Image (cartoon, rainbow, N blue to C red; front, side, top):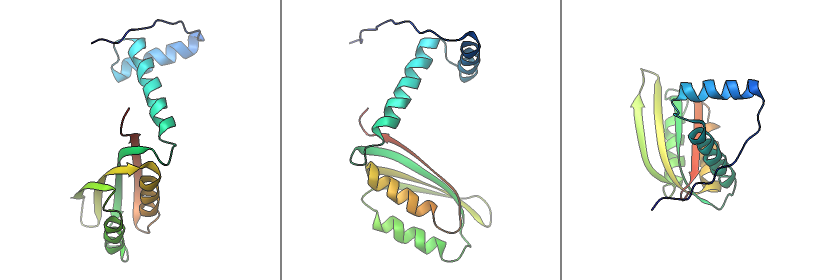
Length: 137
């Protein structure tokens, strides 16, 4: 079954439209409509992700120096404390000092955000980025 498509007009400055066309061409969109649909979807996901009680899925990707203090043990303790939210972990040894780790998460948005914030605040975490979406779009 195909959804009904509604057409609508958009007024936009020529310079902004030119920049938009260059961006969507670079990203591989075949037309403006699909690019606009993706922008709308993304913004709806972001808005729904603000509800701390919404069911969400996501990933936390981090780079850290495993030689920093007691970081490895602190990470493991946090992960064990949140075993209900963590579906999977992937750990990659980047070099002698640095590790890349990805946590696949599921649960209430607020719980996932709190876990990510706690991990990113640990000494030795060089970079952490949480990507979270509502589990039902």
